[in-house]
Length: 371
Image (cartoon, rainbow, N blue to C red; front, side):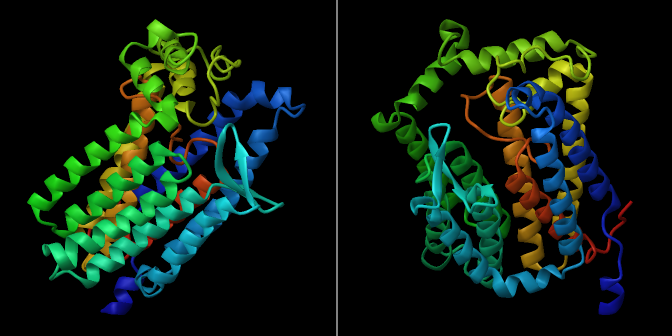
């Protein structure tokens, strides 16, 4: 019977939704990055790098789709430790500062963000840790406190890089895993309250005054549209000018140096401008399909580790997608969060496609319809 389980096909709908998002992402990265690439004397600069990342990500996805996810559990501690070590490299001479933040590691051949590695490493470790303690999850001493330490270490490593947006994303993801694992609701409520207090303290931190400026700009971006509210206002202009059908592929005006990094943190704005409301909704629907299939997999897999691992991957994609769209629609204060599978960024794309590969492998062990 075990052999039959291994021979099951992966979730085709999940695979198709992922490939469509990646394909649309390549097109939109090329379109939105054109002005910046021309200024660098190579109009195809970002496109070529994204295509290379897609190729590597596709190979990684196929590999993990055929690699038994249960073996990952055995190496979860090693994966987590390696991810933390990679994060610490930020504070060595290998760490470089770009755009006012020290969040990248330069290995000469490649430059990457260790926060992406920390995210998947902590998800794997958390899923393995809780699956081994399923009878102690509701315990404060043996369940909640050790889990809080894992969350604190993982998120703390990213917070040290002064990346509040990614810290919040990972914290919500790990909390989702703990919630699904069966944590005590009173502990959950206290953790949420503590998280809110921590967020407020981070915003009012005088050493990072830009966070408070972003928060006040969020309350009324047009009151300071030439400074702190600039990104939000330009993003709203892009979405508003797109109308129902959009200005047309490649015909965005806001990508001409009005919106900072339109191919990354604000790519959804360019999608809304060039492809219109219908194009933006299509992207959202593809993400909903991906999330729906991921939830089905998490609900129907037999073992707890597979359930929690699938939950973490789906939660990460869900939270990051929601934050990205909320930022570009000025529903929350501005923060730099890329759109999974769509935005420019080699490390992020490879990590997310690898994660989808793991999810597809878990789907091969689920006794449900995969169409």
